[in-house]
Image 1 (cartoon, rainbow, N blue to C red):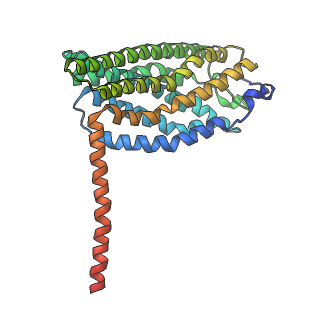
Image 2 (cartoon, rainbow, N blue to C red):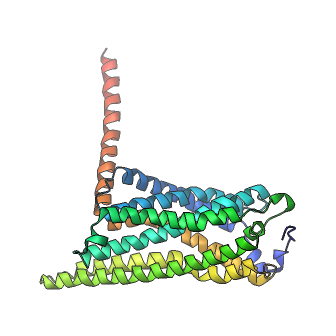
Length: 333
């Protein structure tokens, strides 16, 4: 693989059109994600970690921000005619960080679902539901496992010099046999991990909905509007999670098998690559959805956000008033 042959992708017209579609989508997502996650970081910095939910939320905010900051680099790499050096740097570092933070987001969304489950369905369970130290240790382990055991080895094993390559169209050209094998196993591991988290999220939120609705009934309340809101919230959380991440994890396995094999010179590979890129764009939109989820699920976050927005609005009302008063006093003098 030292001398890459250029495959004529124009032989597969349905998948070779709009070469700048993916980077354009990334660049459209980036300012929205930066604004929403910037506000989320601003709020979470001022939010005290007094509960396990807030601990998981703060870690999710950090993962979303890192993923957001890699988007411009991912977009530049996807542009037609990008430099070989930038492509190589992205393969070795930025894409690895991008994918690892996405898996980190999935992990913390799962822990948030578990946290809600134990606090609402099993409130007496102090290990998962109320133990702050446990949540901090778990959060640290997530970062260590997903970055130390998957990202770091991928960075180390992507070591082929770019001096022998005239043009790179796949990161696999920078990996040796050990790197290809580790890449394939990592993708399989993270895919299985995603589906396990998916089952956890579905079970947790369905149980939460049943518990809350049962509480309404036990209290003798006929609050149909409240029941509908609970069902809507559960439905939205599950649907947003699956719509964002589901297509990518379905496409990723067959694409990876083609990627690490010798079948990367046919239209099947090009079609899978096109589907993988579009589904990855869809998965990226989750970093725009998560800040809305914080307001939706976390009362402390919503209250702190409203308080800080109120303080900002008061500040912008006071400053012009002071300037106006200063001007009027100068006029009198």
